[in-house]
Image (cartoon, rainbow over all chains, first blue to last red):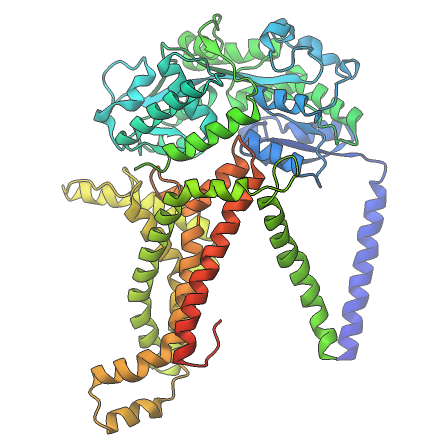
Length: 363
Length: 268
């Protein structure tokens, strides 16, 4: 028995030393932690470019990649501490919130020469209200919220958010399962600003969402991507790029931007103030802005790219694959009928959460 | 010696049970700025309706599990030894798979355009609205938690001395009286721990209701919404959790009183 034990221990020790030496070989390599949305980077599937491996190969910097499923989940993880991420890609209002709370580094744009490839529209303070001094982020994708619906089941013209309240489609309607996006739709329907902090307006929006409960909507996020193509529901609001992916999976699906207008969002790359490898993180951001990586990413994600050359490539690809109409939906020239989410005050956020819970428990 | 053996477990419990509990209590009684406050606990009152709804769904699931699980446990405990082993195995096998995956498969079955509805349509029967209903949540709970009801009841029943049953029969009990006066009282501890093991997780679950249920949030969903939602209110989330824990503890204490009067077999 003792013999066996000593053999096992010996083997374990040898293994340990071996793994330690292999570690020391990599000691000069820096590792950065990248924290991104799920399904938000080209990963080498179907012959696409494996962006992260390519970055590692070109720079020798190792990347530990992990994903989150909501801005809030990402924020809470960083806020709770104990983790150190070097690159994150939150959305507009969350970037604003993190800037306010001193959670982001100011970027050194000299280390990001490819920033020059970003469209000038994204370097105007009035287009970037969440980062008005343009010091904290580099835009990664942008897009709008659209309606995706099954043309076999819904034959009437779809052009308004009202259809999500239509009794005819009871049990067949999907709805955003997060307060901000769901309230956004009710606010658009009522003609309010998406960033209202007015108590009455928020309460009215909640009333509208309560009324919607009579059509028994299913509240979902990622599951929308599965439920719509498999025809388990007729209509859903979702992000336009993902709607396009769904239309790819089922040719009976179509998408539309409702006439009341919609939410316009920008996801941008930032460096949390807890990062220990800021220069390497900036190298990663720079790489992501390169035309090759940006094109691969945007074709995988199917959102809209703020990188000029990638956007041109993507537009060309969309026209070839889907036609001019779709290309114009993804890259609209006129964004006047859209509004961006801005950071709400903690009080407004708490009120919205409370109202959301009351919407979701009043059957 | 015995003390030293227990040390690692004590440290483990301290770090992973006691410390988190203390943190929940701490967050529940502080405001976001860190000062002591009762506001969070008072605010929990607003969620009374959701508490009741969750307990109702939890109670229904528990009763169904009991009705299904008790006879099953009795059948297993009365079969021959190798049959017993097989049956216990069959109860446990589904639990080798993550419950999330199993719940997803129920989604595929129950969907509007899912497998069951397609079979119905094939036979020209009307489609059913199954997903997005309270029934679907209860089905999901019963399916997921049934083994937790069967196992404790079975383990108690398997230990019942068969001579007691024979004695009852010799003394003139018919089979109904044997069940009522001998088997039932002796299996109460198993039933009690089965009820606790089903009721507690089903009342506080959040993912099953999200995947199978319609729009209604259960109390677990509300805790998640407070912590992961836009409000990021850890304090209120902790307060709701604390109240939930206290309510569950009280329920369990009441149940234990019933259990103790019947038998001295300890609970799981």
